[in-house]
Length: 347
Image (cartoon, rainbow, N blue to C red; front, side):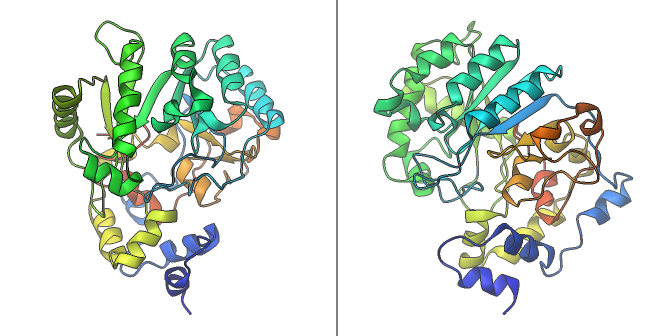
């Protein structure tokens, strides 16, 4: 049985990262991502510095979203420990990396989340919380929004669409209504409001096997609809392409969209997007302290290689800031069209 057939036949649990890598490498009619990189003089791809330390504190989440590349959910037990969190802070303290981007899962559910935020702020670093919004309404997190505001944490919140039907289809029944309630709670604290220093941005992922629309256009649409219908305001909207890994890869295979989607990504390769790839300015830390070029490589279990440190225990920014980056066919997702990164479109 081929790797693709094996993955398609598997229902639960999800296929291993190794199986996913084999499927992506063997995609019919898709040339290696390294080929177009070579044509524009960017192979091997290298980092250009480090401005963001992204810390994935685990896969525990209060939601189970259909497109989730992390395969996060309420039943996941991969959670960063205090010991590993302390290694994160020790590594950060030895550098001048200005921004810490904390993600998950729902990162706020990790017992170390608030400790991490406070230690990063003590070091004078800007902190981003990748928030699914509904976590703000959990009884155990009743003071979470106030904690974020008190520590000047930037909130980047995922919201698939400005209407309930599309959002709930991807994230579960009632998620849109709860997300709006959470956004109103953040707005009440000053997040996203003109003149406030509390930044609130939204993330848009397409619902289906499509590339995102132009970021400026969909931002204007979200801004108009959310304010008119719900009185919600925000600072920015970022578009992120759905990556062909984990649950979204299984959706593509099960729906018969796999080959067409991969071809769409590859044929939309944009040389200008390569300059702004997030892997070039980011180091991604896994829940167990392993180091990756980006969150997507992390989920495919492709650690930093080529003689650069691959764990926090050996963190050495001098060796990491100009490292060679591990690439694969999933990287087409970040270079298609206007480009895609944790900060949205790259061109």
